[in-house]
Length: 165
Image 1 (cartoon, helix red, strand yellow):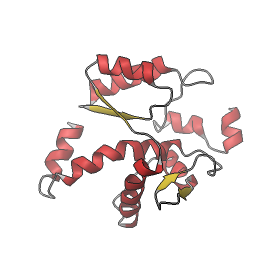
Image 2: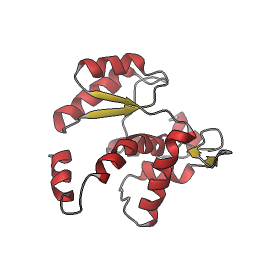
Image 3: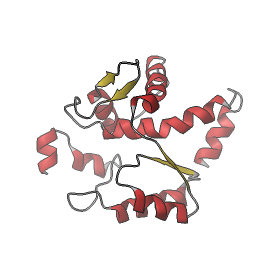
Image 4: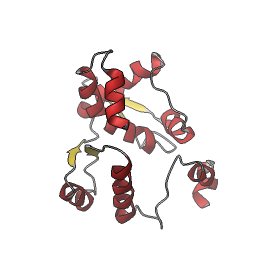
């Protein structure tokens, strides 16, 4: 409730509509996150988890014990630059499509900073509101970009079918 008023975002409504899942308490509950991932594994052909290595080691160890490949994606400009560039192209070409209002909210809040080498990254400090949903997309998109390079347009339907069974 406090966060809804503070952010002026109807989180409760978004939970009811299935766009986000809350953790109990004020901190991220890694056991709940683990349960959610296992639930997703039962529904989808989850082959790998991309993650921000900050404060995630225990959860990652558990996921690796389940046989998942876990890929650390640091949130530095030299890492995030390619994902941001590709995402900009997807948005410009209207190929990034979502019905998730929380994802759109996070994407609209992103402030991108460019370092002295011309490399870009989203800035949590300069973004006044929540950007986590879009950053999570970027982290996942890193590996998607590599997979998509290997798929022809003709093979796209087959790939989508494999991913979403």
